[in-house]
Length: 266
Image 1 (cartoon, rainbow, N blue to C red):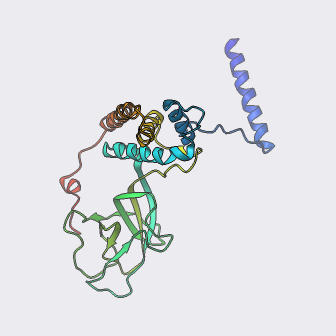
Image 2: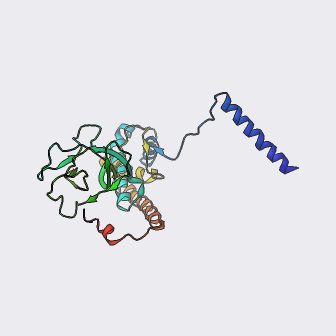
Image 3: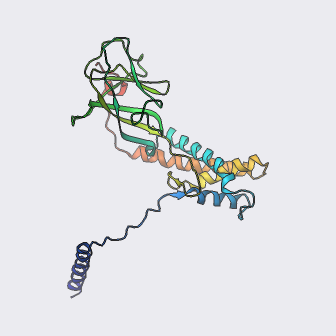
């Protein structure tokens, strides 16, 4: 009997759901609360610095210090191999060269005309794939020559084949047709602009708040600055350790020697 009652309830709930769909109603979406906000960070900082009312340490005063602490945490996690800083599938177009010439090179940089300039959050490229622009062909991985003597001197072909990262730009030999590239890169999270800005590193509020309190305290000669700097170092170390454990638990297959070296014939 109890089992029959449970099934009846499930059928009733499903029937109500169908009625919602027929009438054009949508079920409410619960917003994600996974990320803290900059305002929560600055509120904690004020408590740490004995200024819970914000008489001295307003958000406007604390945000520059919070951004510095935020960037410090990102660098520490990035150096530990934290996967949260990898961005993929940025699609750009490298236009064809007008006349093949062994002395030519083409580039994509911050100064390239939109929409084909480098992503604003890019720190360093990791991998690039290519295909004929406007096609639905599979992307083919290109060879990174950044640490292998740079680009050679040869006449352009229908594909780019190789690339180099230098002077904050992507450099290619060019191709005789427009080429679409897919870019995978390490990124930086945007700075906080106000109290509503999301903190995109999960569970990092204490690490950022302690480092912010240390910086703000140092600027005003607070005796608490050193204490909060030590606390920040401990909190950042905890986050780095967690990131390292996640990487160690990831199953990885050993790649062929040529793939590990990053250099193959083209």
